[in-house]
Structures are given as C-alpha cells and as structure tokens.
Image (tube, rainbow, N blue to C red; front, side, top):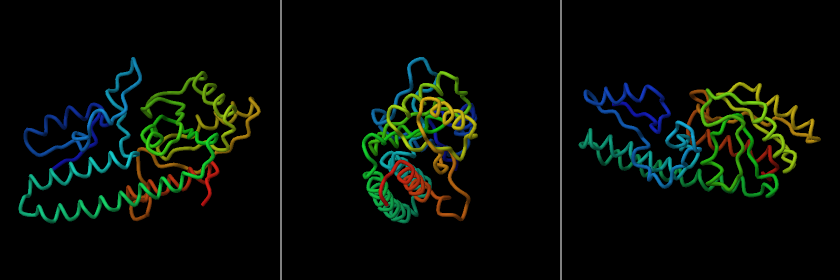
Amino acid sequence: MIFYGGLQLEGRMADLLADLSTRQVTKAITDDIPRDELLAPEPGTAEQYDPHVWFDVGLWAHASRTIAATLTERDPAHAADYRAGLDRYLAQLDELDAYVRDRLAPIPPERRLLVTSHDAFEYFGRRYDLDVAGIQGISTAAEATTADVERVAALIADRHVPAVFVESSVPPQTIDALVAAAAQRGAHVRVGAELFTDAAGEPGTPEGTYVGMLRANADRIADGLGGAQ
C-alpha cells in the first residue's frame, strides 16, 4: 500500500503511481478534500492546486480520514482499530489547531505578515489570519527574480515586519538578498528561526512528527513577529 500527497506534489512520479495502482493499492491522501477548500493556482501557472495542505490542520484531518478509510477497506478485520486510532489522532489535531491559534493571536495586526523563501504557507495564513509573502512561487524549483525580492522588500518596509524566515527545505540565499534589499529601504529586519515546510524535523525529535512540526513553526513565527508567549 502506497500513500502519497497528490495535487501534483510528486510531479511526474504521479504517472508511475497511477500505473502501480493496477497492481497494488495506491492512494493520494488529498483525494477527499473538498475542492472548494483548496487554494487555486495563480493564473497562467501549470499547477492545479496549491499542494501544501498540511499547513491547514482542518485539511489534514480530511487526509487522516482518507488514510483510515483506505486501511479499513484493505483490512476490514481491524476496522475498529483504525477507527480508534483515527479518533485519537483527530483529538490531537483539535488540540494542535487551538494551540497554533492561541500562540499566533497576540501578534499585532501590522506585523501579521509571514515572509518566507517560497510560497508554502498560504493555507497556514488563511487558517490563522496571517498575510503571507513568498519570494518564489509554490515550487522550490522556481527561482526568485530581482523584481520578486524588491516586491517583498517593499512589503516589509511598509508593514515594519521585524523578522523573515528561512526554510528547512530551501537554501537561505534568497532570504539574505531580501534582508539586504529591505535595509536599502530603511527597514531593519532580521532572519528568524528556520521553519519546517516540505519536510519535518529529524526522526525521533518532536519536530519529526506532524504535530510537533506545526507547533514548532507556530512558536518560531510568534517569537519572530512579536507574539507573546
């Protein structure tokens, strides 16, 4: 059994997974998320939807139900176990959602701008009332232009944002260029703690789990933008 993200997150591997589905169970965990809850792509891009659904805890609950349903269909003898596991996990997600919301709530309105290297946090911003500015596009393969850097630098200067964030899966050079561009506009912005985006933390650490990863991101964003502990 193979579970994968879907929404073109795997790129051309999606074709291979489709071929494998004739011989074994393969399932995109985003299949059952209502499409009206997904973020549509920018006009003129190749993406169908933004695949970074794990940054919206409510959408991740949909994915969790899909996983449990697929396991139950494949192994109905243990349906009760899968249901119990799902119920426990959904309770953890409810606690996580409340934690993130409470942690980010004290950030002042003018500072509620999350600036990162690539545009991975739109779902996060929508759920927790943050404006989001990624220098690059949705894909980490995209390259930022000088115009992209200047565009975001202007936002930083206008909003007096105290921190921008590097990502665990993206080299920091673009953020370094952004800080320099913001300084030329008179904005004093620092590089905040590293955020987890397209990968969790090391196995065996709290950040190596979904819940721990999002909690860590919420803490680092709140600390960087001025939210009270």
